[in-house]
Length: 203
Image (tube, rainbow, N blue to C red; front, side, top):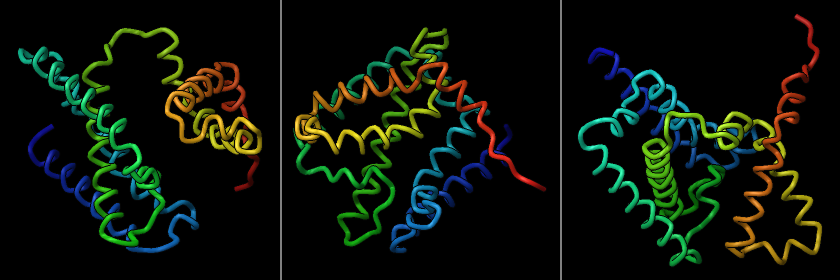
């Protein structure tokens, strides 16, 4: 890609970021076609699209400084996990949903914090995940549609059972539940069934 292409990509990314901020000043946008989430997560979809073409992040793990970069990313990963464990009660989880309007300056700062955290995790994952096939982990990565569609349903069902008190607000049970949901919902036959579903329509 030449310089002009990179400039255009940077401009579109900047525009996506601006839209992700502006939508926070508009209340109740998530009630209409989930527009708030669309604009909040748009920069990540656009970034991923450009990364697939440019391979800029992947190139970091293949250069002469690949070892140093992996070491730095590992330190950042440990720092993020430690920070979340230590300051769990101070972190507003709604900031990561992409649905909340800016009621105050704290919510605005929370969105920026959520974006920065997400960017760091993406960088860490891309740097550390190898190019070779990863068995069932690769299957999970390619079968994300049922996870996206049905995880909320599982949570709603859980909320109506006595298990809700044992899981809600407890880090280890929540991690275990997320792992089990991911394994079950990424089942290959479920993904195949969803791919076969077609909604009839007329031109």
